[in-house]
Length: 268
Image (tube, rainbow, N blue to C red; front, side, top):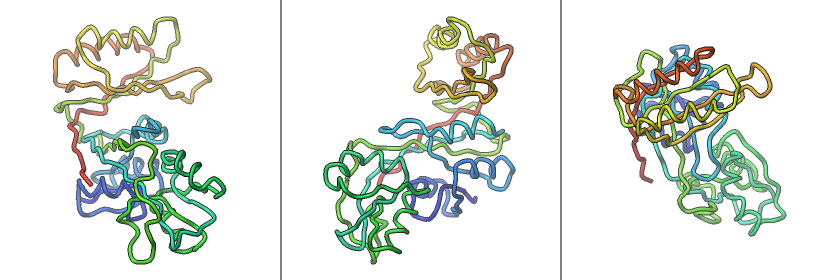
């Protein structure tokens, strides 16, 4: 099975995707990955959904809301950031914007005068460091290879740093079995108590919501849809009843069931 994820080789997405298949190919953006799976070009895609420091990845939220795909698995991997360069003397640190943010305190303390440059991925920043002696990258220490030195290890601001990834598949692969589920709700309405009604549909049935995120619908200013992760399988009666109530509340909009799944940990 071929899996598509964020490239180039050596990204944290690549590490997560390797837990799904040894046959991994790359795209430059989350949107391109989800679109490729939606179009049937690949059987699986792996995309970051949430980091324990920086929160949700909005590009992923928007992409999975727009596409007709399934979420079939959740992968959690620890993030170990290292500063990689040709030498300890550099002028710029290049990496993915999330990695730069996750190492903000370290960089401000140790390298207050260097320039920070956003790259499309951590691995792309490491590539820049290989090409330019004035650039350092942020990535897994294993990405240093023979041509870069590990200037510093574990430079992330919090040692508990980890990222959740979703394994996405064609819509036909949606499952109702698993310990967690993800849905997207577009109420197409806005009135006092709307969000409370949505939450109560789950709370009244003792279903824990592990994440709820609002995103602009794109239809008009102040109009939102909601991404909801909850700890129950879609096969469970309580989940079915909760979503039936949610569909009544969102009668003028829609409810998309992305599927149920289990969690896998990738240990470094």
